[in-house]
Image (cartoon, rainbow, N blue to C red):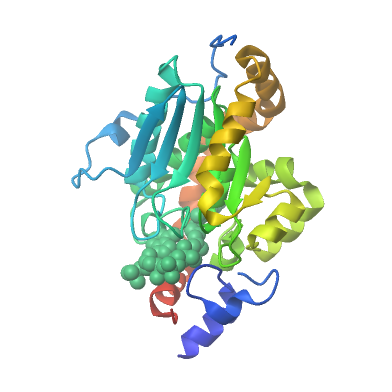
Length: 312
Ligand SMILES: CCCCCCC/C=C/C(=O)SCCNC(=O)CCNC(=O)[C@H](O)C(C)(C)COP(=O)(O)OP(=O)(O)OC[C@H]1O[C@@H](n2cnc3c(N)ncnc32)[C@H](O)[C@@H]1OP(=O)(O)O
């Protein structure tokens, strides 16, 4: 009980089932050329291509008329586990290599949660090799999304904290379900961890420096109307219109000749992607040493405990 009270104040989580914490505004918590790809990834590690034991399908891909819909499907909360991230990269590479696919709508199979962010259990109680492999997969997914030649639209049909928000930020356009129970933001500080520089860069490029400074330090999770106000999402629509809106926005984007749009995207995004590429290995080492600290492991333990024990 004591933990719940302290945690609720400290963590101010948003999302379905947290009731009173949601009340404060911020407390809640057909020129189809294919260009040479931006030099984004340095290749996904062979070790991460290993088959996982469960053989579950964690990313559903459905493609028609040049547009793929990718649905995250990792119940209960679509956390971004190493297994999901690995499958995501493989599916993404297939789409990138398919010349007929010009756009991807990124969404979730779950009705209330787009993604709960990085799987905390992949960052807790594991060894350094696991943390390094996990972080490399997180980097890879972001690089793939952020530098994709395809049009990427996030159809955010539920809560989208931290890593979930990052996937949305890496998209070209964000449409969120207009339900005040859902929140989106980079809430890392609430867990006692720190969003890395490339999360920050992507946020700053999207909502500007001052708003990012405020949002990142306080770990703010924004309900859709507030997210729209600061430009964290581009459009909010009724819950049952998220997918259809994404399709119609996609058809507008696909009217632009691919080569011109792709070159423009590269011009806008390459410096940010390159910043990570230049120090990718150092960023992995930094993550491993940070996440392995006793104090950080303790914070993650407390946070997991809080998630399990909080009143629904
Ligand atoms: C230099 C170093 C840099 C380090 C950078 C690290 C960057 C980190 C980025 C991240 O993404 S960290 C993850 C941040 N995510 C969150 O804070 C979200 C936490 N979850 C929630 O707020 C809620 O779960 C929800 C998404 C709003 C859904 O709420 P709901 O009431 O529907 O479900 P719950 O009962 O809370 O959860 C069910 C079940 O799932 C577990 N769980 C939730 N989130 C995660 C997660 N991110 N990872 C792993 N597991 C998660 C939760 O504990 C419950 O477990 P059980 O009780 O069923 O065992």
